[in-house]
Image: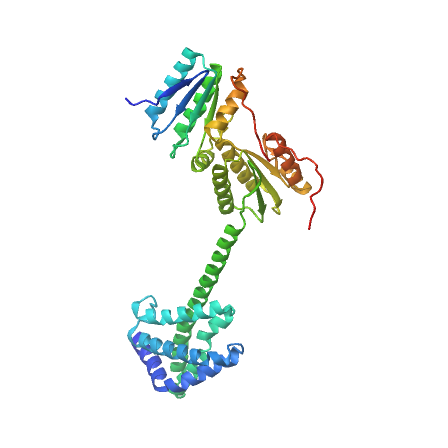
Length: 131
Length: 291
């Protein structure tokens, strides 16, 4: 059975969903991810769904569940790169995903995770905001 | 009197008197519509002739009771043309329907000449003709209304496109000044434009300014909440600004729960908050020389 790969990067786990999610795949991801968090003691999980174009209420709930489960396992989850159409669909379905952290892209998501987890950084991430 | 006989009476009345009816009819219309200028006289004559021709053919062939039958199609087509032309010229509905109704007087006069003192036959023929023309007249008004509705729908669409600009205030900060009433269709466009721009520009903060929204009811509030939630799902924060005192009162009276959405009274306040959140600031410098 196909599975979604979970990459480990230091204290963080990285998941990139690049195929259309079906229910079994989503359930498998939920199992794998919780197992990996428990095993590695990861403090942050980043899920990139920028390639996900179709979403239904089940997938929406799985996303919400994964976030809640990882919180119990003491890891923060950030969902990044949600497409406008997906966001509109979820809102119309009434799934507002309260408590789930979101970011526009992987970079901003990682920045958010770093702030949340607050691990001593090798190489300061300086914010060069120009105006 | 059977239907075929009525057909015949009506048909022969118009047929024999065709030229007279046409002249009188055109004169009648010119009297009633002063602003249908001289230049259009040619067109008017043309319209009347075509209508009369198809109308005659329809009476000869067609069923007077069932005007949905195919024989009437050509007559309806002429009326559609007339209504379209007059509707687009901006003439009133009465002026458009006059095209058909002014046909009555010359037609009845002709019928009276035909009846030759037979009151019963005249009454029957007039009744038949009136029913026919009334239905045609109503149809003209129907077409006219549809044309006008089309114009209104087109203008609404134009408005929709014009009224949802998303502007960039600073790197990573967008503003969406809303003007006019928010309905479901408009909110959909607003939401899509905003989310699309957020994705394209990678902005993390969007300010929705509702200074130009006249009223906020539960529906509008719900639309706003949906937009804010969708933006949050994508990873952007929304600030709602431009809330007037009356609107604040309405929102509380209606019991609308805005949750933890940041709200500000003015766009300036919202911009300041957005700058703070993105770690930017405005500093005072020496004024640049303006030439």
